[in-house]
Length: 325
Image (cartoon, rainbow, N blue to C red; front, side, top):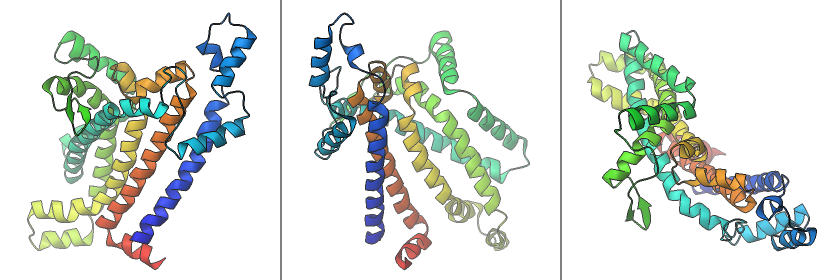
C-alpha cells in the first residue's frame, strides 16, 4: 500500500509540473496587463517602467523558471491589481467556495443516490419514470438559467430566501463558515441547489444503472431465495457493489464543482474563488489566474489520490493488484 501511495504521489507531482507549464504559457502569452493597469495616456517610458516592475520585460521561459522557483517556496506571484500575494487572495476566497461545493455535493448525494435506488429497484413503476424525466431536465437546463429562475421565484416572487451574498458567518477551526448560522443557511440554499442540480441528475442515472445491473446477478437471486431481509440485501449486497463507480464520480465531480462554480458564484454574488477569477480575468491579473488554476490542479490530484485509497478500502482486489505489479 505504501508503494502504491508513493507511486501515485510521484504521478501527481508530474501532472502538477506539466500543468504548471501549460497554464503559465497559456495565461502569460495572452494580452498585455499593462494596457489595463495604467492610464491609456501614459507615455512609453512609463509603460516600460511598469512592465519592468512586474517582471514582464523578461523572456517567457525565464518568467516560467522564476515562477517554478518561487512556487516551490509557496510563492505564486503578487497580484497586479491588489499588490498582495496571489495565493493569499485565493486562500481568502477558498473557504467560501469549498463550503458551497461541499454543500452542493452533499445535497447531490442525499438526493441523487436514494432517488437512483428507488428508480432502479422499481423500474416499471410510474414514479421511476418521473424520476428519470426529472434527471433529464437536470442534465438539460443551463446552470445560469436555473439560477435566474430560482432568484425570480424564491427571491423576488415569494421572498422566501435571500439571493445575494453569503450571509452571517461564524469562525470555526480558524475558518469562517456560513452553514453554522441560520442566516448563512438561508443564503446558501439557492446557490447550493443550483450548483447541485446537474450532479443530482448524474447520481440518479449512475445509481439506477448500477442497481439494474446488480439486481440481475446470480448472487442477488440466491440471496433472495435464502430469504435475506430486504434492508440487509440493499445495504450489504446491492449498495456495496455499486459504490466503486459512485465513489469515483463523487470524487471527480467534487473537483469539477469547485472548479466550475464560477457561474453560480457570479449569479448569486457568492464571495468565492469563482467570482475572484472573473474579476482577475477582466483585469488580466495573471498571477491570480495562474494561482487559481494551480490550486484547482493540485485539488484534482489530491482528490484522485483519495479516490484511489477509497478504492483500496472498498475493493480488496485493488490492493492485490497493486502488490503484484
